[in-house]
Amino acid sequence: MKTRSIIITAGGTGQRMGTAQPKQFLLLNGKPVLMHTIERLHKFSPESQLLLTLPEAHHTDWHSLCEEHRFTIPLTVISGGKERYHSIKNALDACTGELIAVHDGVRPLVSEATLQRLFEAVETHSAVIPVVALKDSIRQVSGTNSHAVARSDFRIVQTPQVFEASVLRKAYELPYSQNITDDAGLVEATGIAIHLVDGNEENIKITVPSDLVLAEGLLKSEG
Image (cartoon, rainbow, N blue to C red; front, side, top):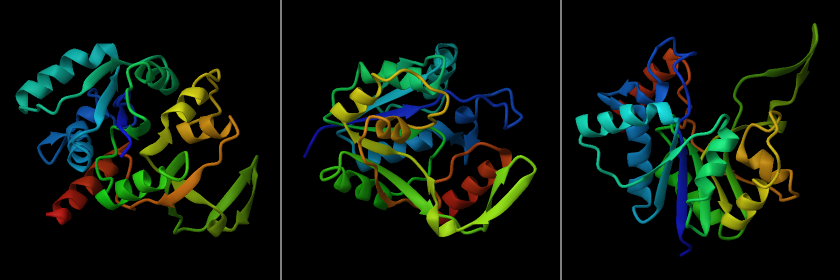
């Protein structure tokens, strides 16, 4: 089995949450969201190298939370950059794995089955991402006009996104662009095809207060 590095990005703020505390540090069933995320990834692949990108201003708070919650999973904390792109580029310098996954720190509910599908697929495909189908009808907006489009033609993209290390490193040689919002988009810009696997609907990104409420319910339903 190829060696693995997992980069967990946690550069968010509490702006859309309406809180002063960064959303990754908010409590979810009595424990910071970020800890739930790290625990899930570590449980799936305890031999993987874990790297956490965190703004330097949040390092002290994170270490205090680790002491408070007796959180001892080994990981390397990497100082985040101006944008997500720069944070991941910083983390790549410390990655040792032949495979590199990048995951949002505020997605604490990725399933073991999704992780298994991703790491199995990347043995054959060099760039793999999890997606889920849309349930609602959607419309494309252009100025003041809009028109219906077929939802079957679209997918919602999740993380972790998993790549051959050489593929992701090459992608991060490209300059930063605000038009590219995830690692798959950057890799795709180098000419590499992106392979899709099924994600899990519970793998939500906690961004607004209602997401936190939903995540609490989903965690409780897991037992």
